[in-house]
Amino acid sequence: MASAPRKSKRNEIVLCFTELVAERGYDEVSVRDVAEALAISKGTVLHHFGSKEAILEQINNDYMRRRLAEARDYLPALDDPVDELQAFICQLMLSQQDDRAATVAFSREIVRSASEPLMAEVRQLRDEFSAVLVGILERGVKSGAFADVDPRLTSLQIFGMTNWAWTWFKPGGRRSAEEIANQFSRTVIGGLAPGATREGAEAERLATMVGAAMRAHRPGDI
Image 1 (tube, helix red, strand yellow):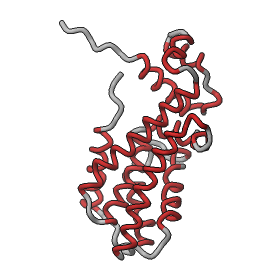
Image 2 (cartoon, rainbow, N blue to C red):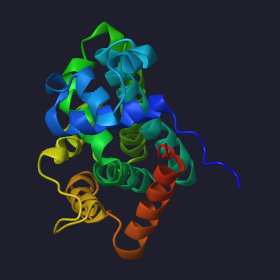
Image 3 (cartoon, one colour):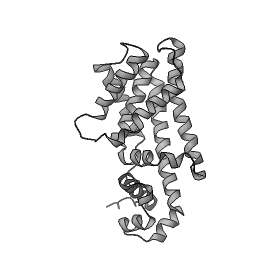
Image 4 (cartoon, rainbow, N blue to C red):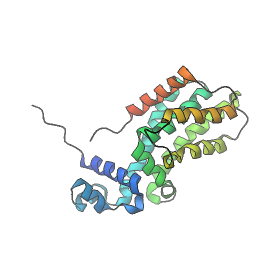
């Protein structure tokens, strides 16, 4: 009988730290907390990462790489800025549901990520992801699909609307992430391109594409 795959201690540490930061916030989590939760020594944690800050960097780096990989999966299949924008909004909300702990951990510490030297690569990845949304908006404005707005300012509006959803959105609550994404799309796209938001089967098609991309880039079992 084949033995079960050996679990990666590094991945266990990342997952545990992610969940603790999502629950308590970075400043309230110590290396000792992680070691005790996993029944390992503090030295084992430090052997893999060297510092608490390095674990947070790994969480945020992995998080942004997943979001970029997902967008690069589903966007090439779309050629309409309205479809692209609605799918992107859907991705941002589905991450609040299907990648919950990492999304909350990332969002809690977004200010820290914006300034600390260790987070330089995370900032670069975040800029790349932001540029995806700005590009969608620029194409929409240029083609006439959207009103003549400032794409960068509008991108901040959309990220602000979705990135703080962790403070009030509850997975399994009255409204699903997909339902909220569709509502957000109605108000955002309705303002940019009145009457153009996708409804019913078309909205479901976009959500299905994004969901498939997210499942393809979900962290593997540890």
